[in-house]
Image 1: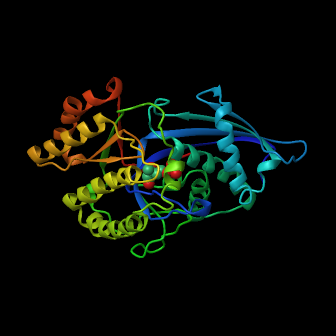
Image 2: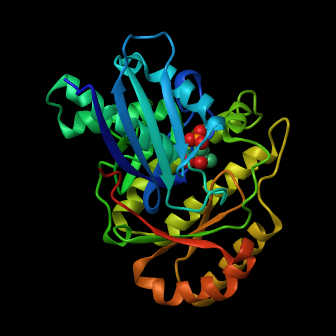
Image 3: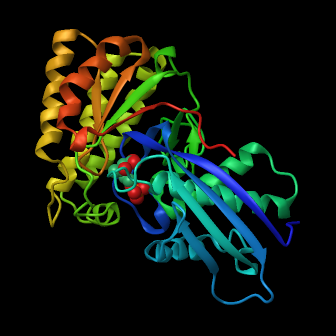
Length: 347
Ligand code: PMV
């Protein structure tokens, strides 16, 4: 059982997709499978204080603090999440919650906090749920948290574990599911044990089109089916690449996935562009440098203008100075975040 009052806390990281999730069906079921590196530095810490209510009410009861300050505008999103997960967490209406959340990265940096934020909140609630259900294996716990996180934000289901997580049913990955992310179940070459992701903050402004709308626009998209088929095929190809550590082929898939994601945005109705001129300048600099240096630096993009620069630990001494000298000047206020592949959420 759960005490009448108490506090739970979790820190959960962001993740960066290698094969992108773009398009969804009912109930946050992805239209195609995806796979991601779990990150470390970009994370959300959420503390939930809970107190038993005098009498159960038909409304959820919670206060929301973001970076220590009351945030009314985030409440509807949390309320939607609570409604979706209520059947799986039947105690929710019996308590009043004070949800206190902080991000490790600067507010409005253009870094999406939905993956880290939603997974951290799901972890806190799941910790409470565990007290009711007695013993629960770590596998069962992780699977259910991932399931709940997905209902908050699709990509959040890939933030619970490390270092590589796959989500979405696909023939090439045994145990894959549309309902939760799984720790990548096959052999991972040593080169991927320690990978860097330097995140270049190109544009910190509010996105013109949210990812919710972007997913929506894949319905009736002229290239939807080809794109979904391609994601399955890329995942299957990555299996050998991840095992063998073939960085040349890794780069081909990862960069193509990033550009395809943005190509889908440019070819939807209505069409839109989230990249900025500096996004393209950075991409061109990376291509030029990769050729000259014979290193394995590459880029990927989320649904925004920021660029994630991926590279192996063994080439850091050559690549990092290049990033600072040639790429950081394209960042807004020279801002960037040094992140790396990580192990997932922690208490
Ligand atoms: O989790 P959402 O609904 O915000 O979707 C995010 C989708 C991308 O970040 C663009 C790609 C991905 O797989 O993370």
